Amino acid sequence: MSLSYLLQYRRRLVRPCFFVLLWMTVMNAQTLYSAPAQPLSPIHSDELINTLSSLLDELDVPHSLDLDSITNAAQRWRRKPGQERWEMPDIKLDDEQHQKVMAHLKKIGLVDELKPSSKHFEYALLLGATVPRMETRLKQLVKLWHEGVRFNQIVFLVAQRPLIAGIDQVDTLISRVIGKGAPESAQKNARPQTETEGARMVFEATEMPEAMRKIPVIYIDTPRYWNENYWQRANTRDTLKKWIQEYKTPDGKPAGGKTLVVSDQPHALYQHEVVRQELPESFKTEVTGEKAADETRTAIYLDALALWLHNLQKRVSANQ
Image (cartoon, rainbow, N blue to C red; front, side, top):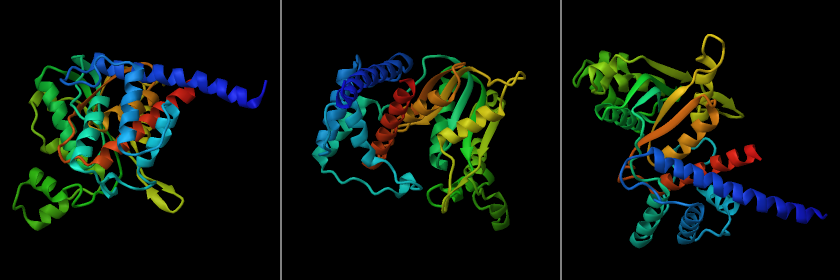
């Protein structure tokens, strides 16, 4: 039996597995999320593959009608190592092309709001981000509370990323916490330096029912690490690992329970996938996310799509 035959045989096995995983992932979204305009309803793997392929065609990206090929082709949209989302140049599209691209992204499930079907969770995991996006995520959680969703603990999965005054709107955050026109000395003393400190102030400044404010809140303050020649901030996977490492039951095992992942669009799908990979099976997860803001740039959508496909591919490889 030749080596080339074995490789072709392996590809024939892997591709159906990837199709099934994608089908299960998005079908899971269909059953868990009750927000309107959910992606691809009803959905099957061929429809998703065709939608992804049409998106690549619209953007003139060479590929074959194969999940491995589509995933690999999409990685051109990933951020460079050490690059933040706000540092990415946008992708220029004319109006007609932009409308077609957005239609595909909406169909895939990267645009509209996602809501959980369950009404009670052990944990609400609020994923770290820039200060404005953490505000958006916390407001989404408050909104769900008003709709009857409950949780026993709020966990901010945050990092020691240094805040950037403009991107993180630090001055606005300070004003919300200590009031506009506060003395300069008070503003200086209240100035947050890291994402974790920003998250604490976001929680302080956000309006919410008193019963929700009394729920236990913890902040997983994940440090940066040295990466050859620069300090790398912790990502979602890093913060999850730190949480699981630090918070265990008395017998030393990770605690479990129903877990609500709080993200926003277009990041919810890939972040939920990362959470599912990192948490033990004792955790049963759902995801919620506010709809994508109108000003969300195409490059941000495509980066999120590439990350989602990349992480799905990792799970397929791990299960082989």
